[in-house]
Length: 188
Image 1 (cartoon, rainbow, N blue to C red):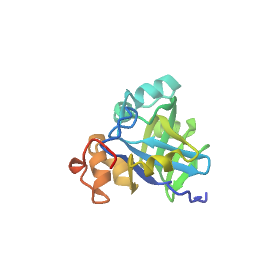
Image 2: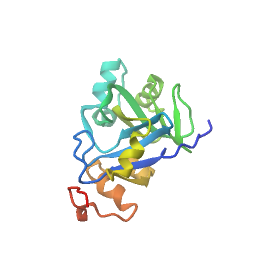
Image 3: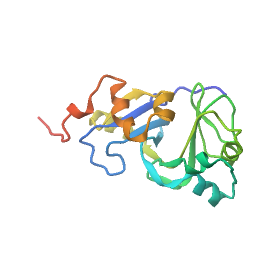
Image 4: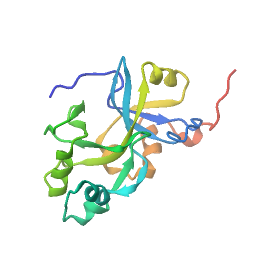
């Protein structure tokens, strides 16, 4: 699968402290796709109220792995909150994989979840319910308005760091200490 380069794909959007939208306050969002029609991403630092075991049960998928059943599912964003998005590494293509970068994908198909449940899935995977979406030009406008910082995504942040550490860690990747930034905005 070739990776089509889009301007902000594989970038993290890091909400600045002054961003008041409750859907994105203190969030880190992985941009999965960005083109002239808009952008789509998945919030990677917010837990949903569900575990992977509950999602599997609802989908009729069985697993014997207790650690999988207990894994938190992310609240990926306010768009399509009933739909699952699986961020994963590896080279295998699943039924609806979208390449974000070399070796990083987002997949919405059931087959990847079934493989994960059997212990045959990608080495690293995170399941999120919902995604974030921006219309044409909206993300660019929000960047100009200083709502977000951008930083390159990396596997450690996406798959290993605790959720509560990701906001500061993402900004730290580009040398920004969010605790030193005002939590209000203004105009000169």
